[in-house]
Amino acid sequence: MKYRVNIDNANTVKSDLSHILDEKDKRVLNKVGAFASLFLLDVSNYNNPVLVLKTEEPGSKQVLAFQNDRVESVCFDMIHHLINDCIAMGAEPLAVQDLIVCSKLDSGIVKRIVSACALACQKQGCILTGGETTEQPDVVPDGTYILGSSIVGIVEKEKIIDGSSIKEGDIVIGISSSGLHTNGYTLVRDLLKSNPGLKDVKINNATFLDLVLVPHKCYYSSLKELFHAHYLKGLAHITGGGIKENLNRILPSVTDAVIDLEKYQVPEVFTIIKKESSLSDEDMLRTFNMGIGLAAVCSRENSDYILKSFQQCGETASIIGNIVQGSGKVVCKGKLRYLQA
Figure 1 (cartoon, rainbow, N blue to C red):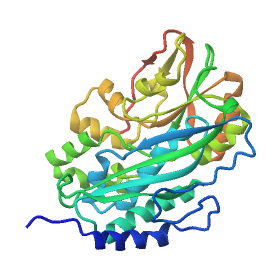
Figure 2: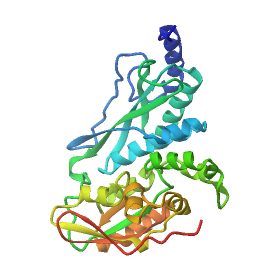
Figure 3: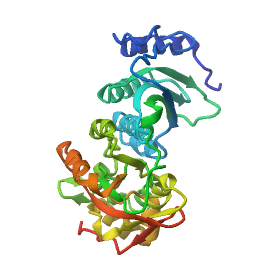
């Protein structure tokens, strides 16, 4: 007999989640179990508040994470990616909703997922208000969990960071990633299938598997004070497509960004991936962030202030390019320098 959805089990699991989500945050006006979450939006400090909305999922990295019991890790991946896309507009993240789709609810796994998502939100000053957990036995393979999440942020209309003020003579600052973040994992999983011993290859004091499962870095704590300074003209979260297909999303149509690849400090994990995959540098740059997780555009006169601010927050940041006249493209020059792994 095929597995049937156990409604009683689902209700028990969801009831248990209320102990995780029912915090003392006065902005949340109801509890888990309602048809939707009520969030009190305080706009008293805004003249023209704009809501910033985004939905995200952690891609095929979640397959690798669940296979290796890194459940909490991939939840941080998802929430950090989600928040980074929101704050790229200059927004304050407010509330997150999660989605868990599985073939059969395992209360222990679901509690771990929700707890990790709630903690990841809490650390960035926002709140997980609820979401949806659903069994889909005819849709999802046994033992598989598919995660997703959505966020609401807020920004003053006059303080939106969208790249519209970028002009010739501005510079591009690159802020280091924590590794692969959440892109390129279909390739990584293929490499691990072809060479199972790869997961145990040591890079310094960590294994290859450890390094590819390092959580996606969240940049909100390093950016939020800069939002008040009005010095940032554009922010690009470097995800799938790399620097070329993310930085171009914020460039005015009359400008180009010229990126000097020799300014990159490429983490050793990418050296291993290049060697195992034989990908060209062009394909590596399109698949991975190659060590730059966020690009910030500012005027040259404000660059020292911004660099110092990033460094005080513990970020590794440096000038990696400049803005010239053009047609909205990102042009890369020089060659990536791979460190010996």
